[in-house]
Image 1 (spheres, rainbow, N blue to C red):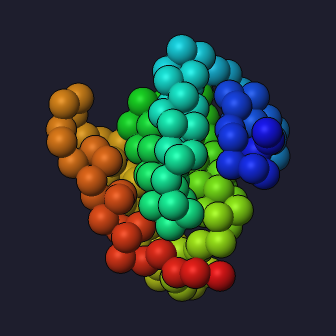
Image 2 (cartoon, rainbow, N blue to C red; image 1 turned 90 degrees about the vertical axis):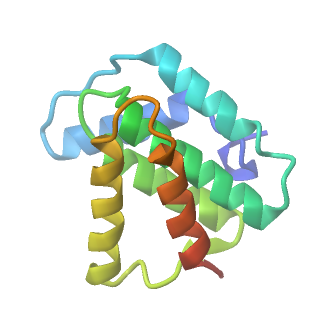
Image 3 (cartoon, rainbow, N blue to C red; image 1 turned 135 degrees about the vertical axis):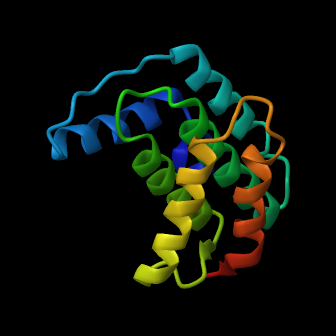
Length: 139
């Protein structure tokens, strides 16, 4: 099994994050490899779901995990969005209107708000999941 079968590894995420950091000349670093492994394990636990639910849960888990827990020094939001969109597309879904600047702005504001939440806040993941459910479209 591979990334394109929907099975993610920490190295898949590390490679993408490192590329973003190099492109923008930002320092790369993985501060919390255990947290990254926990996120990946949870993502892969959704492989038994139907494609739509799998796409939503995997993307939600990845975005909430990387954005809230910040396992990397830089590029957590960019990495989470890039890989989440790819995971959704692997399962034949996308975010409706995502190519529009207005939709991207709303999406990134949601991620910024998620990043600022307090530990234990029950909406860390639910706000992202709600956004995905309201904006998912079949491709």
